[in-house]
Image (spheres, rainbow, N blue to C red):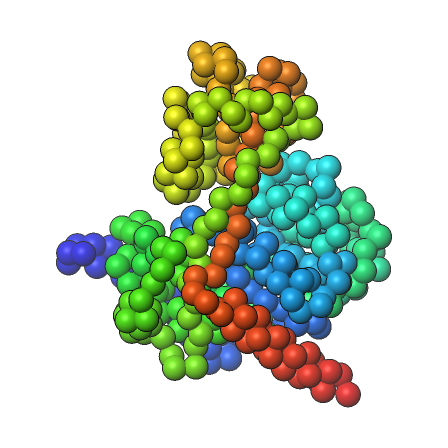
Length: 375
C-alpha cells in the first residue's frame, strides 16, 4: 500500500479506531442479553462462511451439548430483506421478507427460532420475552408468536454491533484472504480493523486445506497477533450430495455428469472446483452476491439449460433460497434444478472435541454470571 492509499484510508481507520475506543473505555455502553449469547462474524466483506458455521454451531449445541432445538434462537439483521423491524423467520417465507441466509438456516433447522432485527438489542429482548411481540408496534406483524423464550441466542454477523456484548465471540477468517495481508475498504476488503481479531474469544480460519502442520498453525497465530488465551481452530468446506430444490426434482439428471451452473455468492471458486471433479461444467452464469433473481434471469438460465437438455442445472444452497421467490418457474427447470449443500468440518484430530469442551465451559460460565446477577 502506497502513501496515497494510506492518506485515503486514514479517515476511515480513525473513525473505526475512535468508535471501538469509546466502547472499550466505557464511554459508550454495551449491555448483555438476559441469556447466554454467541456472536459469530468477521472483519472482511463477505465470503468467510458465517452461515455454514452458524449451522455447525447449531448442530453441536443440539447434538453434543444437549440443548433442545426449540430453546435455541438465531438472530440476524436479515441482509437485503424488504421487511422492517423484528420478524420471526418461517420455513414457507421468502428471502425478500427475511434474507436468504436466515431463511436457509430456518429451513435446515425448523425447530430453532430464527429471527431478524436490525436492532440486535431489541431483537434479543423479544426472543427472551416472546409474549411482548404483540405489544411492540415494530414487531406486531411478526407471523408466528407461538415460540418458547430463548435459552441461548446465536448472533449472526454481530461482531461490529458493539451495543450488545456477547458472552462468546467467534471470529472467522478466510484461509485464502488472511486479514494480515489485506487493507480497509475501498483499497482492500476489510470492513473493520484487522486488530479486532484480538478481541475475539475464538478464531476460526475457514476454507482451510485438509491437513495443516503444527508449524503452520503457529505461524497463523503470530501473524494474527493473537493473545495467549485466545483459541485458534481451522475448518474446511465439505460439499454434500446434491439435492433437489423442488420436490419434483428428477435424480436421473445427476447421472448425466454434465452440468449447467448459476451462482450469486461472494466466492464461487471452491464450488466450481468441487463440481468439476464429478461433472463437466458446460456453462456458468454468474450473478452478484445476494442477487435477487428476476424472471429475466430465469429466462437466461432456462436458455442455457435448453442448450444441454440432459445436463443437471445446479446452484448453491444460498441461491436456492432466493430463486424460490420467483413466481412461475417453468416445470422444465424445476425438475432439473439441484443445489449443493455444504458443511464445515474441523481440521485435525480431536479439534471438534476441543472446541465443544471450550464452548461448554464458556456457556456454563456465562449462565452462572447471569444467574448471579439476578439474585
